[in-house]
Image (tube, rainbow, N blue to C red; front, side, top):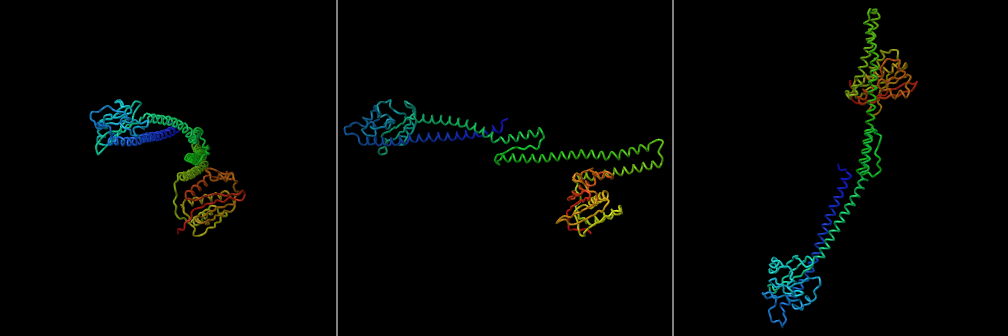
Length: 489
């Protein structure tokens, strides 16, 4: 398969060769036409002068000439020399490179430099007919040293053809010049094309070097799965530069996605491990209690009642764990909650009343304004409130404050603050992780899913949740939800 570098070089060289071919062909044709037209111009001038001399010779014959002029005779007498034919300077001062012949109206040779019949120049029958029709005639014929350009001009007197003047020039010098020009153009074209091929190969290599580095980087990433590598490009921001920049941007996104996938896989493994651990304890307890109930002889009725109560408690614990996992699974699946107007102060007041009945000995205060509503799901908000109040009452023996207020335009903030032991920064970073339980929670019942469920529900409603904590001073959970003007009755 031909590489891009070779294709570019071949294409560039082919375009250059075609350009040189067209230019050389045009130059050759122009030169050929120019030299031919120059020869024709010289022959025209010479033929015009000689024609005038022949016409003068015909209209002013010498007095001593008694016979009919050779131009008028039909018996084709032998040709004579120019010295005999005419004393006109046009015949006596001919240029050496010009070949001149005088013919009769019938095309017979009348005068030549040596006055012999072998001096006759070619004249085709078609040319003779054209001359007899009083038209000039051009043709190329053979000569002693090569081709000849022959110009035949009719000599006319009183509308009748009285003679023909032929003027010729050798084309050998022109042909040699054109052959040399053609050879020079071909050699120069071949050398230029080869040089351009080499230069194009080198330049295309320099131009495509960043692409080669991109390919090498991609291959290395594929081998090593190292998405931290980048293409090192220091050139201009042209198409190749934009490709390198785009490739690096793609690598950044791939790195982020790869890290997210790794984190997700780790979380999944940890989640499965934690679920297995949490399910193992109650299932082991239930299985052990069932084994005790199957003992023979049976245990006393009181012990069986305790075993059944323990099994029921563990079963309820399993149900709570499964329900929490189902809530998290729905959140992970992206199932959206209803977005309707909910009177948050009213809902918070209701949750606080129920919490006071469950823990009447605890101090629970609430600062709840009127006419404040948020967009959310009522049941989900109720579950979030219960999770936050349950954690606050479970892990602190002091007062618990619940505050609802407008944080800023478009948002409403719910704060649940306790006066418990607080959390260190290391524990605060993982407080919303599933199955995470701090040191202060090890003696309390639970699975470590409450805050994870709260975060999933709040984010599903388009809100945010976070926690601030100071050791020995307590913790505060902040929930922000989108406000709405419509307050339900």
